[in-house]
Image (cartoon, rainbow over the protein chains, first blue to last red):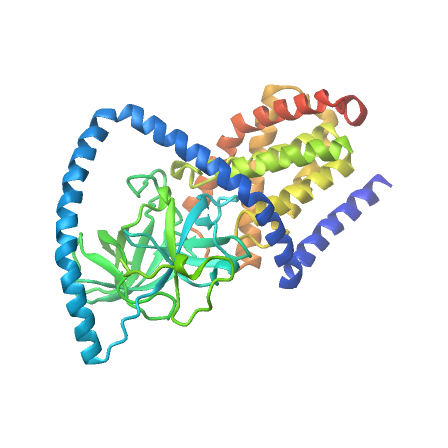
Length: 296
Length: 169
């Protein structure tokens, strides 16, 4: 009888595996329900952890922070002066665009806060944002910071979404080396290390690498890598990172390049989801909150 | 009723903490297996039914915090829970070394099982052997301190509401 009971339990487990996997209509509501229930706790804990980390950093680096504040104040003053000059240039640019018939429509952005920086299982490189379908966010939309590309939206529910980072091996991005125009495919290395972006303990790991570069292309360490726009998910010209190491692949047919991401993937706090042109207006947020802005 | 209440609190807290605590790159990005530790506690100290319920809920929580298809973790937790449940009469339950060894072994087995299921069943890019070995060793290493801590908290919670005497040992 006992053996029979265990057999039934194993069969039940297998049935669960099949039942959860077969129809998306069954698994999606369950996943959404669990995510939406946990999202407020994740967000609150994330804020507490960030506040504690900020406090610790502030205490440790008090002197350096004071010097940095003075430097930033000077930069702000210089920036304001430059901004006044740029206003005139922008007006002139808009006038010229009208004359040339160009539509000045930069990507619409949905500013979002990161409520979870870590995937729960350790198998994916993801972050969770506090914006979802109600804010106009859909799947496969690019996510950026001011520094550069972060990834793309993967799984979206009403008030939150998961973003697959460019450091995930399942994330592929069509890119090109800015200086030479050499095209390649960027894929994640499965790790995003705080601060230095690289780890070489036991096995070589880098956050991202570009594959299929022409082996005769004059690519150099330090070259900027940007999205090429091929594939349609990412608009062209978004900064991805800099080349940190060059090597040929095992077959010696192509050049490969490790890339240090421009965005600090391990410390993301605020990001923006780029909505495609003609995306429907968010239902929950005021339209003014979906700001327009230039791609980094 | 109290079993369900305590289980809900333990699994909720473990799930949120597991998603919050970073996976160290030196350990292959392995996560601290807090949810697994809760399931193992129920396998050792509670009835089989309670363990299966804990395994299913823990699986749903873990899979909803990641892009893993729903059900993979639940299956892994359930199978490991049944194995540990069957072995519990030969284990010294309230022992630090038991907790560390059982936790580490189950965490390593869970990591390998999850990779196998993902590689076969999901649209998942295969990973180099070195990284899988590093992640497996990493999750086992993280389970060594995590499992005794979780078991201690879970036992305290059970004793607080008078559950241990009724359900388990």
